[in-house]
Image (tube, rainbow over the protein chains, first blue to last red):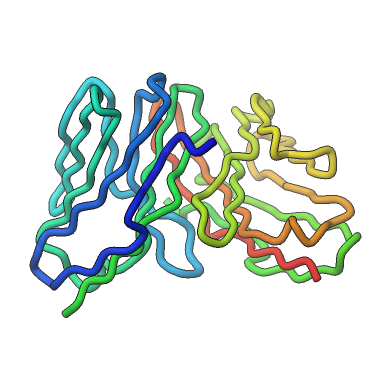
Length: 111
Length: 113
């Protein structure tokens, strides 16, 4: 069963605008959430994370929002840049170290 | 920080052959993970080591799969009697206590013909 879900598999956005990626989860035991970016033929690269005790974490152009009651998190990228074109994965952990990943969102930033 | 390295990067093998992959984690990281990723899916957890102890295995890890981390440094993942369904990207990641952030290597792409 897919415990972490990413709908809208692809997203196209104009350079300079905001990219918003969404992620839903079903396991209420998840207490740590991460976003990874992946280029073709490379491994996932860590972007940003958030603990379940927070509802927002910001790092430069990247902000992650967590809504525990809705079991929903989102990643905001602003402003979007052409180098942000990649596949983005949402991942979650229940404190047991294994990460559960969503299927990913393809983001294309149009110059 | 030289990052997580994996070898080989690509492996093509015939069905029924055995293959072995190697992962070298970031040197000070005591935790090491193996994941598998197939087309259109996110990485799926296979197994996890803390130092040399294998602490958790997914049900995805059939009897044909074995992983070791003999000295708590590098790790190997062996697949015996490969099947076409084993074709995937095998990813290794490492982390250090108490940080839960996992750093991934570039992966080994396995193709079973």
